[in-house]
Image (cartoon, rainbow, N blue to C red; front, side, top):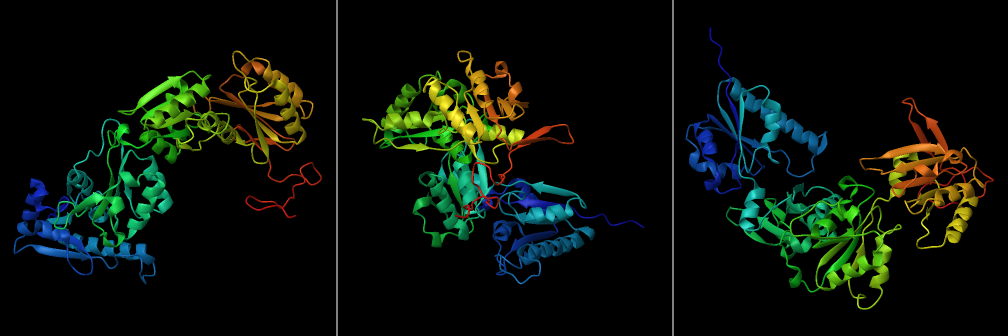
Length: 517
């Protein structure tokens, strides 16, 4: 006796709405299927079915998969997610019955079946059990870009696709970092998306597309859209930045001072990524500029690391001519870096009207501390050992004061080819106030290809191993080390300071809470 062969499952992408944008393969599969299945809300209408209406036969078996909920309000014991999971299991069982009976099943999906599509929930439950083919379709992303008539991505730009259901702060962070972007699932999320675009500084660039290629299509500037008029089938689009607006068309430019962190792109914040992507010109020390990916249409102005004032003036002059300028620093721009130089020059005529913003970056002390453990877990001081901009006598006084206060020390710019004696002198001074076995983190090129992080003792610190790419973290009297099971030595400074010591801090103090008065 022969066994009936199971049917075949198809996930059929129908494109964005216009029936003429269906692929030939999609039309063929629908026309030849035994069962046509489609998802719908409780009202029973289906956009997917309307797209394929001309290809349906009178003898088609239609399976209407009706969602039990369309918003997150439900009395299901498992909540919204539980209600949907039960629905998907029941819908998959209904389709499986047809497949077991040898019928071919075509599950319809607007756009592409595996791109935010309902079909994928059937696919995950059935594709491993039955022969399956997915028919790709034109996505709403491609349709929206086409209807706007604006490039979506060019050259090395990347496209970010974001669901509007994310929290507003998460939306803002992702939009700030994106080259170009599409936000899906608007409708009731539109007010949050609009605020996120505004917070990310991208609202003026944003475009709106509603029901792309369908009846009732609407496009325009997103900032002009009434939130009460936005349906679910709409998207927000941030097109390609390249050639978006010529600088001479802007009333004025601006200077944004950014920090790249201690190394490359992995250390950038989303806000900084966005500022770098939006800039017409990048200005900075050549070594730091090399960390920033090249972009079509951007100009790069590299220089030596000893001309900070000249670099700042050059950037401000560019901004006066209407250009958006990113001044690039390593680490955090406000810590021994370019923010001060730019603001000093911007305080003088003729630059007082040039907008200047400073965006934070991950500073070297925090990066080095994280690699070593938590040596900055309590109070600490950051001091530069460079005597190019301040006398050594001032540095020595500050080292002494910080050592007497029993602060952990983050020592920036400890040495270079032309400054060879400062580390030895600082060690000598600190040994007058710290025990020789005080832990010292010697961190070089953190995040870079030559990264080296070692823990030595203050009395054994060798100045010869310290250069301009090195940062030193000198522990307090309370800083501890431990060698873990892997053999790795870890350093940390306890947050509780012993009673009776010099700080006067109470043992009950916690983060974000003031000590009792």
